[in-house]
Length: 264
Ligand code: C2E
Ligand code: MG
Ligand code: MG
Image 1: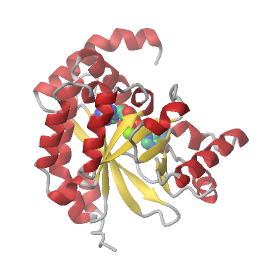
Image 2: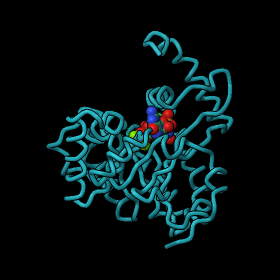
Image 3: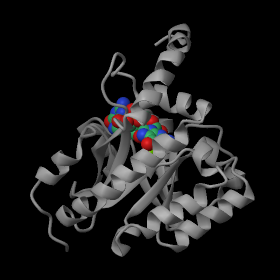
């Protein structure tokens, strides 16, 4: 969509968001994360949708920036978290070892009342659900967080939540600061898997996998759309993937309709 059209839609998107929050028509869909080479389902990522209406096709890539800009991101993400809290025990019953990723905006995390809120939210979950959670924070913003926020993330990790650096390699990351940031997982931005047939991109992915292995960090390659991309990733020891090849984001009912997986 061109920039002028995007800008002209902002007031409509804001109204749509406001209505979705007020009427609680915010919903959550889940996309799988799969292990290689087994392709076994190991996790899902929760992705926000804002219901039906005149611009029902509005995607998170359009409404999340508007939510961040207008301050609606906190109420929006609280609705997402509330839905995830309801869904998590059901997902765990069907898929005992499953992990669930939730995207959190840095605009929300830096709110002064975020930490008490999120600890309260974790307290209300079943004890064994807390350590199934991955909080995903986009790399670009992650790099700019203050020491206070870093300490806050450490308190969450101490409770067993994992912190994920999302869209790794997409922003203006500073590798020199990487070792000061608290994260357990990196999600390699989708542009890498999608351009893996380029020798230089291939070499970068390989280096990222080696780096992650050396530091005991998990790496998930996002945006895997074709069998060729998947096989190329597998050949360089990539063990976790997410993408349309395995699933599009689907409502909870889809994941509950799969056969019950037994804990191994
Ligand atoms: P993300 O966290 O990187 O999530 C992955 C996005 O890539 C999703 O888009 C997903 O549908 C899309 N995707 C997955 N596999 C493929 C693939 O193989 N090819 C392509 N082309 N795309 C793929 P979606 O659902 O439109 O979300 C876009 C972004 O919006 C997310 O990117 C995330 O940054 C943000 N977002 C979504 N829900 C939330 C939320 O509750 N809070 C916050 N802060 N951000 C959210
Ligand atoms: Mg994400
Ligand atoms: Mg991502």
